[in-house]
Length: 465
Ligand code: AMP
Image (tube, rainbow, N blue to C red):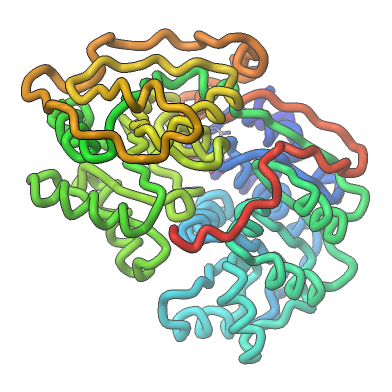
């Protein structure tokens, strides 16, 4: 399958060719025909699957079928995203894929002054990408009207709910015209998420890509049993390995992200942190510095990192294991983006032993244990009630960075999910990116959403991020 088979109009084909994309990813292949037909859609897919193009391309094409001119403050397309970073990235995608169309777009999110956003809106934009809070603010002030919206996309619905945006989303949906095409994307489904999808969509096509197994299979993963007190030393030890050149470190809390960043900088390792309490200007600058290579290490919490598209991340290090097992898959997926086979190192202290069990259960995989100088048997053997910090172990001083056992065997799965293979074999193209590990398997049904429950539950706001 190539993009030629999808009957996209020339201005879109041209933009895709310039990007080097010749082969649609599974989500694109499955969604685009439904969307060009004007269907509502529910897409179960995470960032990294190519889902942004899967909705932007058909929307731009459908818009071009009518010759409407846009009115000030009245966008025809509304895309809601949970984080500023994701919103900015979607805005960039509108610029890329819509380069040869006449449509204008803008992005609005909080944490920055609203004047430039208001100015852009008053000139008239066809496509608006927004985070819920700032959108409601601007609507209240009369800078945006939703009465002309013909296409509505809710992206990362599960994260929206995790972040406590359900009320805001409901308010926004209630303001939309009844006649519209609606798209709903979520990496996971819970009863609460399907209820929201049912409210928003009418007779949706359902498209699902299941990236977990393929992502997990492609990434070399090691677990480092370590006492909490030794995590800093272990991190420094690993980072002394020169091949760890572009490293994303995850912590569970904002406070920890700050502490780890400070510690790294004190040790002459250029690091920056992004999390919910950092200003937008700071977050954008830090991301730019990381992308340009000025910062070798980016320390992030789950929410801040979600949806960020950074290529060339060589290693993901889980300084803390996530307490939601799906987050582990999202986190390590960051390192296998540009077709690369990434590496993920995870630290596990005694009080995180249960998180590891949950992760291994979800991925049907036993993560290879790294041998290293800070190894803690106590962490390794901890049971559920071992929440007390482990006593300090003797610190090693020598040895090369990285696990001593060398490269782990991929796909050492116990069966189940991770034994399924990618349906993405033929999606290589010269842009290289189409080998993205997250693309995964796909299936499409046209039935009404039945509310697949991933077991993640409805999620709680994680204010500490
Ligand atoms: P997304 O899931 O939308 O965040 O996309 C993940 C990455 O895949 C982005 O860097 C896109 O630019 C890239 N991408 C999207 N579609 C394709 C395609 N058909 N071939 C190659 N790369 C793509």
